[in-house]
Each structure stands twice: as C-alpha cells, then as structure tokens.
Length: 477
Image (cartoon, rainbow, N blue to C red; front, side, top):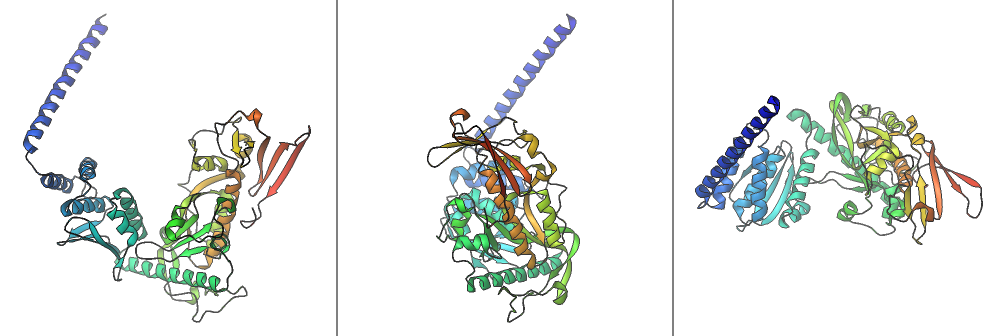
C-alpha cells in the first residue's frame, strides 16, 4: 500500500516537472521568435554558420546546426549568391574539405584536388571546374548540371565520391607518388583498351563489356576516376546499341562497373612509377600489349595498392575471394566481411529484399512470372545452401598491384556475376496466385561452387527429372 502511494507521488512530481519544463521551453521559443522577428534571412544564416564554426569537435560541425542550416536552405532553394555560398560551404565541411571564396568564385579544397564554382550575381552557377594535384582545372559538366538543377542531395553524394577518389593515404610526398602511379596505371589500361578496339575483338558495346580484356573502358578525368564496365546479363536488354557514360551508369538492371583508384594497405607493395608497356608496344600472341614485370621498370614500395571499387558491390563466394588473392598476391581483407549463404545475399540485393538477418524459410516459395503469362515456382532448401562451399560475402573492392591482374580479376568477377544472375532469376518473390496453379515447380540445390541441380516433375508424367547445370565461365550462361 505504502509503495503504491510512493509511486503515485513520484509519478505526479514527474508530470509537474515535465509540465514546468515544457512551459519554460515554450517561453524560450517565444522569446526567440520576438528577438529574431525583425532579423533577415542572411543574419540567420550567418548565426547558424558561426555556431557551426564553434562546434566542440572542430573536425565535424554539430549535426543539429547542420540540419538547421539544411532546412533553411531547402526552403529558400539557394536564391542568392550568399545562400549558394553558404550551402557549398556546409557541404564542403560535411566532407571534411576546406572552403573559401573570392567575390564570385567558391573553392572547395582537399589535399590533392579542389573544386572551383563560379557564380552569377543571382546565385546561379555559371561554371564548375575540377583540378587535381599539379593539373590545370578542367570543366565538369556533370557537377554543373547537378548544381544548376538545385540537386544538392546528389551533388553531396558526388562530392563524397570525388573526395574518396582523391583520399590517398600518406604525407604529401607519398600522396604525390601514389597519384603518379595511379595515372600510369590508367594510361596502361587505356592503351590495352585501345588495342582491343583496333583489333575489333568485339563488335558491339555489349561484347566489349562481357568479353573485353579490360571490359568497356571510360577514360578517367579529374572529376571521375577511370571506370571499367565488365558485365551485363545477356537477358538484360542491352543488345547492339551503344550507351553514353551517363546512360551506362543509369542502365537498369545495372551494368556492373569498377572504378580504378587507390586503396590503403597495412603492408607495403611495389607499384609502378612509369608505364609497364614498351613504346612502341610489343604485342603478345593474342595481339595485346605485352607488359613488363614491376621489377623491370621504375617502382616504389608504398603502403597502398590499386583498387577496383565495385559499383555496385558483388556477392562473391569464399572460394572466388581466395582465387582473387592468388591472382594478385595481395591478401583480400576478410575480417570485416559479413558472411552468409549466397542466395541470402542475392535476395537482400534484389528489389524485394528481405533482412539479411532472417533465415531462409525452409518452405519459402519463389515465384517467377514468364513472358507468356505462365508461372514457375522455385524452392531453395535452406539445409543445402548453408554448406561451407556456398558461403559468400558482399565485396565492394578488389586490391591489386599490376595492370596484368585486371583481365584475370574481371574474368573471375564475370564468372561470379554469371552464377549470381542465374540464381537471381529463381529468387523473385511475388504476391501472385498460390503455387498450386503454377505450371512447373523446381527445387534448386548447389552441386559445387559453379554448378547446380534442378529437380522437377516432368509435365504429363509421374516421374521426376534432374537437370545438372555447370556454369563454365561468364561467356556461357
């Protein structure tokens, strides 16, 4: 009885305390309304910016002030030069970049590059240039388009990608060496790509993507790293048409790509400090440029490596990850990878993804609608797919040290993508009619890392059939 009374008193006191705090908060807000009623928007912007500069953690502005400034700028849509400057400054600081401006030009700066944004008196963007270390600024139409259309969300993402592209480890001397090495790598990959085009190894863009030694290459620029497009499923609709860089980036289902950049490493690696292709190039028996070993050209031992940054990340079997390490002689860091059965990762990456933490339902049925309005259902028994050989992880980057590694890596990734494409075709969830009305039912089991068996009831009979499918390599699917 006494304890109940005490609880009641405590509850009443807490309610009174909350009410008093609420009144105090309302009074404070009313005072702020009165104080700032006559102030201009520019004054408010400047006040929030000063508060950001006084953040306790100078390396990162206070999130509350950042959100306040974002809301103010979102409402005003940066209608003036001062507001545009303020918005660019906020996004630069969010990326850990420096910011300064002259009368009509803003500079977003980092150690190895800077972004130059020229503004009109109205606040609209006239021109955007990007300059890397020791290079002249070059126009960036893609970033210009984002700012002119007030697409600040995508601009922030693009700025983050640009910062990551030039986020090279080490002191100034080391950074300069790594950037030099990266540019020689780009030059060599470009020459390999040019040679395969001269030989007309592939007649279409899709052929280059799936079969080219370095895929379909988009040359690197100051505002974007060199990119290799290396896989698209033959069923995804890209036939003989050639797509631009922007169209390839937006093509759905996605064309698998890799950006060629620098990655950090806990150990030192030997990296090229000049081209590994002789001039004029010597050709191998396949008509491609022969490459020198790193020991035969000027090189440096550096705590870094080259990196194929995969866009999007790829679910890769553990055995394939081991083979990548054997190709490059660079250990792929696996300690931070989250392992799961391959089908679970593919489901998570699909449009109808389920949580990675949920186990595959032993009785779950995946329904696939066919072009002729027919329907197939697939079951992937959980007990079969939890086998160690089917353990996979999502890879977002592949480290390497020599241009010769790229072709072998791409062939291995294409092989994995082919396996993934085949399995993904069986993993479509649907709210369609019950499985009993489907034309055929299939049970899919793994036989090895690159082969599966499909068991089904033969139409118009009482017997079961088993189809064994071996995925030999990416050109055969």
